[in-house]
Length: 68
Figure 1 (spheres, one colour):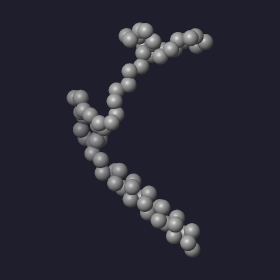
Figure 2 (spheres, helix red, strand yellow):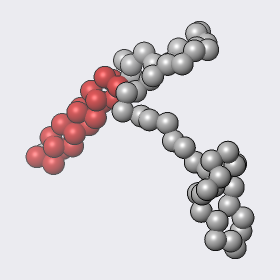
Figure 3 (cartoon, rainbow, N blue to C red):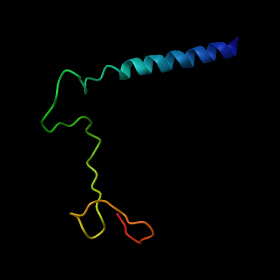
Figure 4 (cartoon, rainbow, N blue to C red):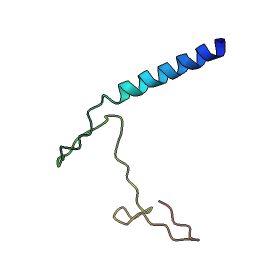
């Protein structure tokens, strides 16, 4: 009985957490955003390019010593 109570409490906490996460209004299907927008302040842009060639595509040849 005690185990069932613990499982129920964890499930309730999980459901409540998921319900709160669904309230974020960062995406709407009826609206198309064509401008720069910051969805999350803690997410930054990632730069990936071949070492020494900033304008190159991020491609590594097989069996090579290329680095990105």
